Structure formats: C-alpha cells, structure tokens
Length: 268
Ligand code: KIV
Ligand code: NA
Image 1: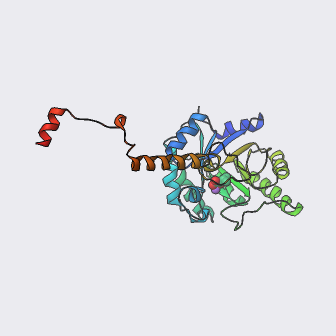
Image 2: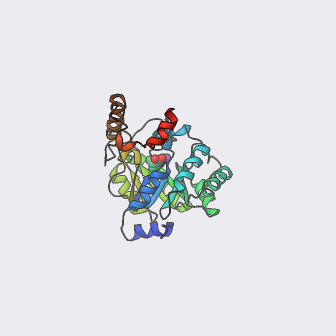
Image 3: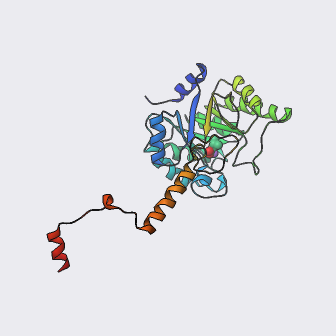
C-alpha cells in the first residue's frame, strides 16, 4: 500500500516512529523499499555524497531531477520526498515551477530549507505537499553548528516551526538542534517532525544512507555506522587488483571455452 501523507500523520498520532533515509540511486531505492523505509528522500546531500561537490549549494535542479528519476524507478510504496536545491525557491512562482518539475518526475512532496512560510503557503495553495527544514541548514549556514542552544535561538526556532505549520507545511525536518528543543517542538506541533542530529524524541529519524552504511568513511557524532562499506569495498578492490596481477583472477570457473574442433580451425 502506498504511504501517503495521511499515513505519515497517522503514525505521529499513534506514536509510531517514521523511518526516513536519503537515497541517490535506483539500486539503493530497491533495498530501502524492500526494507520498508517509510520515506525515501532524494536529498541535495547527493552533491557531497555522490557528485563530489564541496557543498549542497553547488547542486542544480537538473542534477536533482536526474537522481530523482533513478530513485523513482525503485520506489513503489514509500513516500518519495525530494529537496528543492539552492536558489530554486526564492520567490513563490519560481518555487512553484521547481516543485512542479520535481513532482512531474514522481516525487510525492518537496522539502525546502529555512523559515519560509510564504513559500510553503503558496505551494500548499497549489496542492503541493511541502516540507520545512529548520535548525542547521546546509544551503544557508556556512559552518556546521548546533542551532537553538540559547533561549533566544530556541524561541525563534519554536516560533518558526509554528509559523511553518500554520502556513501549511506537511512535515518538518529538524537538523542539529539540542534534543530538548526537538522534543519541545515535536510536542508543540501537530505535523510530524523528522530529526537528524536532533536526538531521540522527534516523530521520526533521517540519516544519509551513505553515513549509516559507511560509504562515507567518517564517523559522524549523530550517525551510527550499521556497516563499514568503505572498509569492505577497499578490501575487495585491493583483492581484485592483487588477483589480477597474480593471475588468480579470472580462474577456470569464470571462463568460457570453445570446442576443440572449432579451435583447430581458428588456429589453422
Ligand atoms: O539532503 C539531506 O541529506 C538532508 C537531510 C540532512 C535531512 O536534507
Ligand atoms: Na538537504
């Protein structure tokens, strides 16, 4: 059964956690779908994780569309969310065009960073499920830093969250905020919150799939390494290299032969 926005809201009401992961390609989408992930999310973190960019701000709309299309081919029941990339939603009409381009490729909803209630309201007015994303915002903040640690900052984030909800945001991502603040915001909102580096009490969790699989070899404070992909892959690539050089690969089991009679004629 397709996981709709109503389904995600039901999860909050009934106290079931929402599972979300970033996804950048078809094969990984198939795995996430098979594992029953609720929200498969094409994040603009594709820029640093896959494209080799230094920042999310380098990712274009065309690149988001390209990755969205490959992920979409592997998604069936999960809710498919996509990021609106840097500077593609500065004005309501431009935001609408961006969102429509992404929905046309099969996204169920779009996410945008910052406290932008007028954009959210405009998209919602056009029937688009728009997610907010506050706290640390990679598109907007130069340095990675915990947001909302002081009373003033925390109060501004709580007010911002309420404003986004009033504007019609479907969901809210909270990134790199103290657990206590994420808890307060989650309790104040009727829409579900999804946390990353935001502690235990949000309605759901999101991680970059590259971080949790260890494709990114760095251990980040907020993430848990569920496997050591980069370590195992490095080992595998080294073994392959060694075996080619040693003439161990390919072995008899990997090769195909021709009939001796045919071979004799070739050799003649
Ligand atoms: O692009 C991304 O990975 C994100 C998550 C941090 C929520 O926006
Ligand atoms: Na993002």
